[in-house]
Image (cartoon, rainbow, N blue to C red; front, top):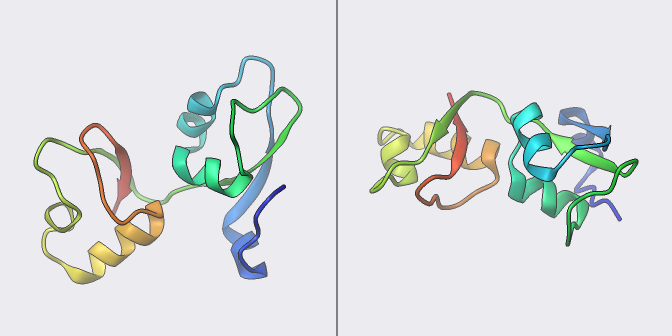
Length: 104
């Protein structure tokens, strides 16, 4: 089952057919997509199978790996608009050390 939040969401998303050798991790890296959000969108409970279609949402911005002591507020440089944009683009409300997010 694929979750569609509303028809406007389809503009930023696309379907991807899983190929031989793909893993969730490699798909996320290929499309600069959030692993947790792909799992959520596609109701995944295990690795996707070859031939399965996945709804993908590509994140905008440059890749940033969260460092020890980072918070969303710190990453956004105290800018409330940047904070909202980072949270929205990455579909997150907190970060953890080693997490890859997209900023800018």
